Image (tube, rainbow, N blue to C red):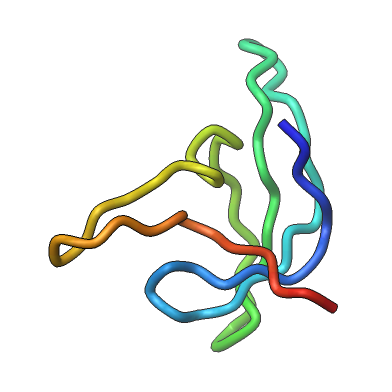
Length: 70
């Protein structure tokens, strides 16, 4: 998976910054470490496979996160 650090927009509209791609210490699964660019700017982690997945909402298909060009 070719995930690059930078700004991304979630399909629901809020923006996040992808900080790092890391590996889970037990399973070696790739994980994305990211920060919300709103509110308390919380830092989160989720499997990289979820970062790029397609999601359906209201009958439409979206990429969960889309890179915002700098």
